[in-house]
Amino acid sequence: MPLVSNSLIVQSESREQFVKTNFKTILILIISIVIISLFLFKNFLFKSTYLLKSFGELSVEPEIAFTNNKPTFLEFYAEWCEVCKEMAPQVSTFKDEYEKDINFVFLNVDNQKWANYIQKFAVNGIPQVNLFDKKGNLISTFIGKQDEMKIRKSINNLEREEETYEEIINAEFSTIQENKNNEVNPRSHG
Image (cartoon, rainbow, N blue to C red):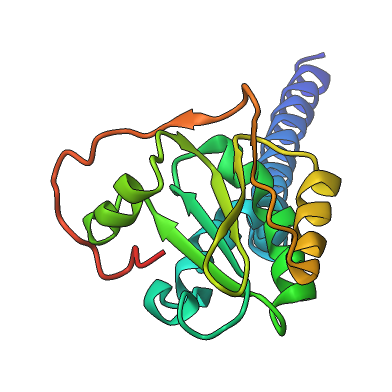
C-alpha cells in the first residue's frame, strides 16, 4: 500500500507541475497576443488621436491660406479634445477630397503662437471650423460636433461663392482650457 500511495503523490505533483507550466505558457501567449494586436492595430485603435496630432503637420500656414486666392477651411482644435478626436476622421476625409481646391489650416488652441487667431475668430469652444471664400470672407462657422453633410454642403457652397454667413453650434464641444505653461511647443504647430 505505501507504494501505491507514493505513486499517487508523485502523479499528483507531476500533474500540478504540468498545470503550472501550461498556465504560465498560456498566460505568456495571451499577453503576447494582446501586445502584438495593439502594435498591429494601433493606427486603427488610435486613429483619431494620430490624425489629430498630424493635423498641424498637414496644415497650410494661415498667412498663405488667406492670400493665395483659394477658399479656406480653418479648424481650431486641441489634442485633448474628445469631440475633436471624434471628428478627426471626418475632417481628414474632407481634406483628402478637397485639398486641391481648398486650403486646410489647423490651429492648435494650446499653442500660444495662434492666440491672435483665437481672439480674432472668438474661439471659445472646439472644434471650431471656419469656412472662408477665396476672397477671405467668413462664410460659415461650425462649433462642436457637426453632421458631415452640413459641413460638406457649406464646403460645396464655397465654390459657388455664396455670400450668406451661417453659424452652427452644437452642444457637444469642448471649452478651451487655459495653457498653463504658456510655452510654444514646436511640435504643436496645428
